[in-house]
Image (cartoon, rainbow, N blue to C red):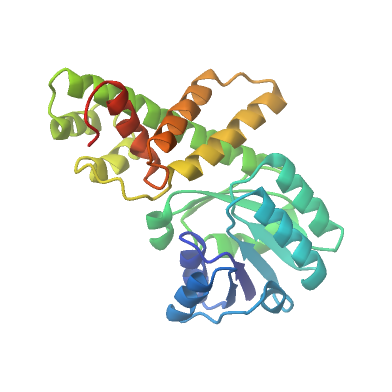
Length: 290
């Protein structure tokens, strides 16, 4: 199958390499010179423009940072992709932007499949993402073999924006878990518990969920190298709160985590892993941040 991959960042580039390894013809485009160079270094053909990448593609896969990027790509595809193509977007964006992009694509005969993913860049590299998809069922059935290249598990959730909302539900729980870790670990640390032992006990306890155990691997060593930054989680929390407001659902705990993320940004940690809310809470408790 002829595929265009738009957005060769930490998530998009591994997706492109897995699709190419499965025997598909993949052409990559990114607006950043360094990312185009990384794709070329990975042995992938690189297009100088989105139009060049997309005009012969049967499927266009995109991994984009925000609403504005998705809307711009949808407009570009409307001008350059062929009728009958399928746009598979894996980005975390608002429900409103997603619906607008879908309408833009549909007006030009392009099916828009929302294929959000659960997992970080490491899981993307290992082809272990969980895919949550929605959109036209016929188009989903066509691209499902491609989605299997990204990870072993796929869920089809409906014809509309269900995949976008499900991604926000998952990330809401991830953000909330990290906020709880910040409070729990700071309490234990301030009370004299050993940092590494706390992680060992928490990971082996009833609250040792997969996300807690995964974070523990790096945070035992106080390593805040980002898999997903404070800035990125702050953006997602904004999307969650907007979805809550649109659906009449109060999200007080999520709003509080948003404030914890604001504190981390204010203290200079915006580019660290989102777990840096722990560092912000340590400072608030009078502890030196790890």
